Length: 368
Image (cartoon, rainbow, N blue to C red):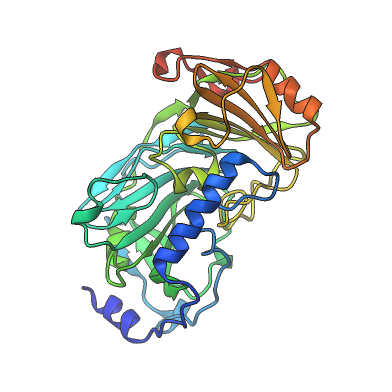
């Protein structure tokens, strides 16, 4: 363990726990299942109880502290480029015991990917066969790669400076609710473009601050890959524009919280458009709330829906469903759209072969 990590652990007193980790995880998963029912209430992602930012004292001398350097300063490593919306510009990779998965979500402001650690249990897949062999310690972690100008690092509190591959960064770590530690590492991977790793762990020493710095230094760009989805729409309500799309997951942090549960896609529309500057978290915040003025189209397998298959289009409180070959296409608006409008969206929705990605459509071609 690095000296700065020992100092961080020695000088941090965990607050009284209002919930233990198992209670937090169980409650979060119940909420996530309720989201599939789409009751119309604002939904909360798994682990949504770890929400608001906490101001903590900076270690050492704060901004006067000499930055910790990781990676080769001035190196010509390929970095993710700012490309057209709804394309992935980086791929999954591994550094030591940590792994960034393939990105599953892209918006007008960022891309999202899950982060995994050998020896820790993630909660995004039910019945993980490795759980019994991993000692029961849990991790909830993800990488957000923001477009240029989208992220505001000045709002990250309790930080100390770091340097990742010659570029400036900030890191913070603090015990948080049911977690032994929640670490945040933000760094400028390209001109005015920031990436953020957030990792909440039951193990206060793992992943360490150094582990996250090493993982950050491994971020590389790739040629732009448009996100594809297995659904096409012929109608979107007037004034609404696509803001976020996901493949093999639901949108936003709800998708990260259930990334390996086998969902197919999500499309988030909003009126007015969601902000693309001044962000400190993905749309909806760390709770995974529905952004104001938005509605979402989900494509999920029958096993992941609490709704019962039925012919035609059926509606409940703020949502409507259309079943096609055992797949639930759902429009969830929380009451922002009328049933008639949601029915119109679903009446014009067609489904490709969800098991064959060659039949899927780029998201920009999948909407009118």
